[in-house]
Figure 1 (cartoon, rainbow, N blue to C red):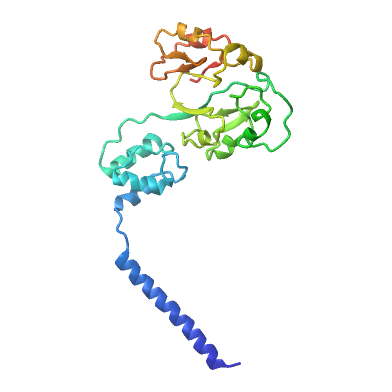
Figure 2 (spheres, rainbow, N blue to C red; figure 1 turned 90 degrees about the vertical axis):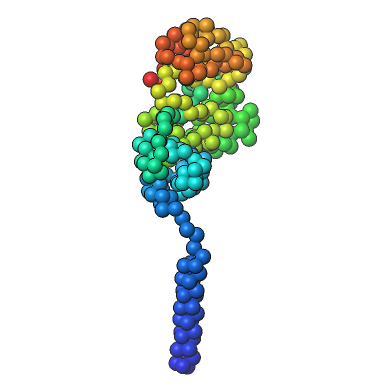
Length: 266
């Protein structure tokens, strides 16, 4: 074995490594991008879930947007008001009012209420069911498929499938919106945490059609709207809708609903 050759090879590799190290060090020093020190402080204040619920690519993206002035200081749905207040202090501004929101599933078609067209045996993934006959076994084309794509998407263990329908634990929910993106039926929406009632149905079919497929579906009868003295409930395309900003929680709508698809939330 040629010892001299080995020494030369090691020296060459070491020399190249040293040169690259020095080059990168000098390059980084003279061409580094200066960042606002507040960006690191804001990033440290954020929860670090990187859920994307704020609409930015992770917490670092939101921190950069806040410092740049293109996102409000209370834009993080996971951190809520406490985190918003910390960031406002860092930025030297007022946090403003932040309304806590939670996810709500607009379906009450549990196994005993909703009818099925056939027995389904296959991949248990809601996002696959639109490609099977009639969009799945459930007779209601608007109903929760019950295979938990939303459950898999939630980082906070805030949503579970109970009796065939996804159900949200409002105390755990951080309103990140991942469950909304995961639901192929678009059954999940964000509503204020303090909401009194919600319409647990998404069907726009006429009453007779709804009653054939689900015992708990909205039939668009309008009794809820007539009973509401505040005008908080309207019926559009055979489906009731609650204006949460007008609702005072009198529960008259829930009492009048013949299908009991208007549910108490608080």
